[in-house]
Length: 90
Image (cartoon, rainbow, N blue to C red; front, side, top):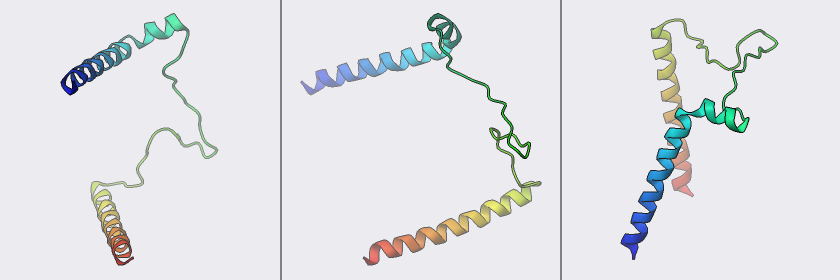
């Protein structure tokens, strides 16, 4: 019985994955057929004229980015350590 249920589940999963790939491939014709919109390009600007949809780094060099990541990793590890101590002492 479980073997049959597993086969049906795998078959359904394969169908869903295949449909997802096909629908992504033919997204534009499907949108036209059903009069829908699956994507929208947004070009709004904020008050300070920065693009709010694209990430812009505050770092100017790779060395600055590395140092920033290093500081972030150290801070996060310290916070995680403290949280674990608090959790295990309760």
